[in-house]
Amino acid sequence: MQFMDRLNSLAAKLQQQKGNIETEEATKNALVMPFISTILGYDVFNPLEVVPEFTADVGIKKGEKIDYAIVKDGEIQMLIECKKSLGALKIEHASQLYRYFAVTHARIAILTNGEQYQFYTDLDAPNRMDSKPFLVLDLNDIDETLVPELRKLSKEEFDLDSVVNAAEELKYIGALKRAIGSCFAEPDEDWVRFMTAKVYEGSITKKVKEQFYPLVTKAGKQFLKDQVNDRLKAALGDTSSVESGSDGAEAISSQAVVERDLEDVSDDGIDTTVEELEGFHIVRAIVCNEVDIHRVVYRDAKSYFAVLLDDNNRKPIARLHFNRAQKYIGLLDEAKVETRVPIFDLTEIYQHSEALRETVRRYL
Image (cartoon, rainbow, N blue to C red; front, side, top):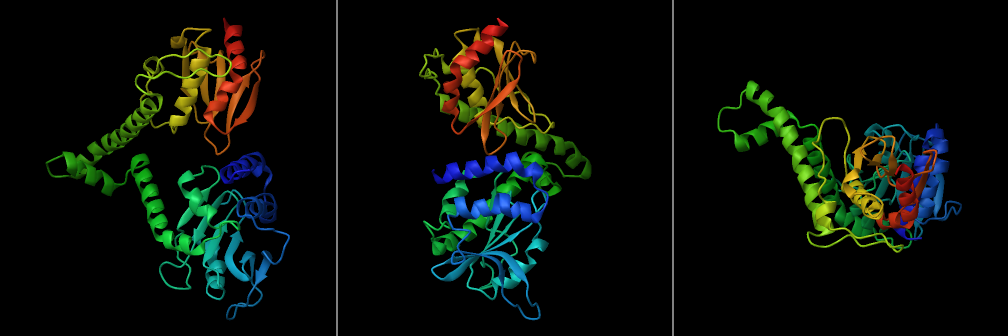
């Protein structure tokens, strides 16, 4: 199993089980130990590799324990502190990591609730754990750009020097990405003032800021929408066609495929992604020999992305559950009961071509 496949598998397990995980011990057993074993590649039952309940007396603190210490080449390399799943991680949870970091050879400290993994090192001062993580892995929304760095901490490819050398850049890029995202989603006063000054020549009074706040918010979302459309058009090609599936789905021009743009972005919390649109166009291409493509539309919701016939909720063709690490396509039977099938690549939708066509034929 490839590294990314193992991450996706663990993320799918998280979605299936997190509703039943209520304690810290359950979090360790169901999520953290599998992470150490399947992702980092260490034997959780070998005390020469993974030391549970690691103890090291620190000053007047006697007998305190850290949840796991990871050993490589006879030295403690990583410390892991766990909190129960569904509880938000706070820097206050890392107090024991701070103390243990200074008295071991570990250069990496991990704070986790089984869903999010925050990785720390000592960029600001030698042998003193930083207050902010240099890498944040969220299994609910895996950032694939971080995967190569995470792989360097695995037993098979352990490269601590490379990770630490890249940590500062990762730390600030990650923080900047979160700050930029916040500016688009909920711009603060400084961002509104900064953007307003770019286009407004008058004095930026309180009234002007109030006037520009919704404009800056709307412009940011429309900019993201344009970026999504440009990427989608580039992926499909202006003059190319959608390739037919192995079972003979008819190809249609991308000019027709791209004709449906993203709807106006509102503040309803729904985020239509590029992958959802690409999945929609694949479904559309598959069923185009059964029905006019203009009758196949989509409606996005917070929980799933629906592909419908005639824009009718009573005529669902498929549901795309892409707002999670493990993606699923939902197929509907004659009673409109949904069966979710996991997919790892959008091209796997073609494997369900006949089922999708049969659903359309039932409505016709």
